[in-house]
Image 1 (cartoon, rainbow, N blue to C red):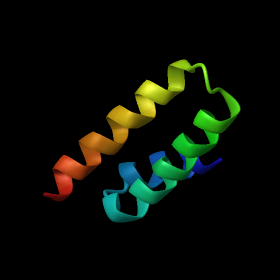
Image 2 (cartoon, one colour):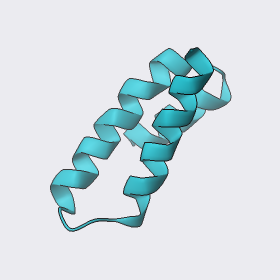
Image 3 (cartoon, rainbow, N blue to C red):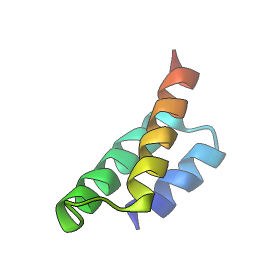
Image 4 (cartoon, rainbow, N blue to C red):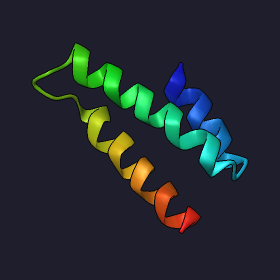
Length: 55
């Protein structure tokens, strides 16, 4: 849910709103899948990409 909303905000170029949602989604995945999950890497890339667009 958080990830989908973050993607929507990202598509709308609302990067500052998207990043906290991606971070929340990432925290949930890391808690549920401590040994890793393919989406963890994807979300981390999304966060870094958006941070670079803000700077």
